[in-house]
Length: 480
Image (cartoon, rainbow, N blue to C red; front, side, top):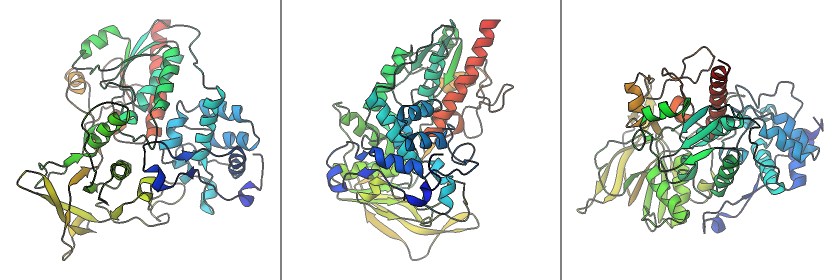
């Protein structure tokens, strides 16, 4: 720790942002990394707290060595900060932009002051590393002769593929879409993360030996048995993509869409594809779901030029400060305002959608429902709170329930692969704690396909840890 009194001398700083009126004009990122001196001061705020809760069980799932890279930044040792960060996180440019930063929620300084700006420092480190040319391919100096198939190119699949290639295995990554990245590519708007970040990592990984195959839907375009015959190990990292639906009257009306259909088409258009998007221009937009995906719909709708945007949530409004039910160092239950919310939205809480109304063309025209309160663990209507709001576009952003079952999962299930009660791949077999092995020989699973819908930082962590177990399994075969 460089400066013992740093947390007393410096206040928390935030990344500078372009004004909402300007950033709404395009889909470019609008936050800027810290200037060097600001980064130094923010690194100095890191306390010598003895037990750093910012990583481990309560903080960073990829186990970033946060106090160490903060200290390097305070001392101006930028390349060492990057080397430290790259030991634990394959893609800091992803997490530095998209992670909700449980590390900051667990920061010891956060008990009495705003926590250390860990996420912003992380992003500043990796952006500088790319500018300086420090991020280079790290190909293995030897080959084991073993071949691994990774199915799915989201953060879990990418991190698993990179770790296995660096361990000397021949890795082929299969992606059903036309571009690599999974929901990073098509679920995250460019104003949160421009997609050239993924492209740069692809080039690095190709130089490390990873072979990317797009437009290949395993279970349809190639059989699972062929994959099992051709490869020594298979890593399932195909995410959790079945959206939670809202089966209420009027669900069939035109203009009621899943959020991911809305976001994916828009991202494809931003990427230069010629296709018809789901436009929010001049429309009254209702976003059902108060999470990050709903927030992304808000930001995208505003960029389209929506007439109005309302985001509703079934649960009551969280408190503005940490709720007593989630004390430090747990990730706090509290009200969060995203950059998309800053750009314009009406947020409503404790709202239940009862149904939709439409016109004689089958188009949605309104949403109706009521406010609710919780009684005995159930939400019950509040009398006298019934409402009807105009709606030309309704976006369902209520999360995901499980992986797509058709094709890949069903094929492997027919061979004996077990699923958990939620429909995720059960991967807790084998002798190791925290096993990623499925009930099928040489088939592993990681990320959302295994744990259910979760955070990008958990996906990267799972990909790395799964790769470690696959590597040990393959090396045992090599020695045998």
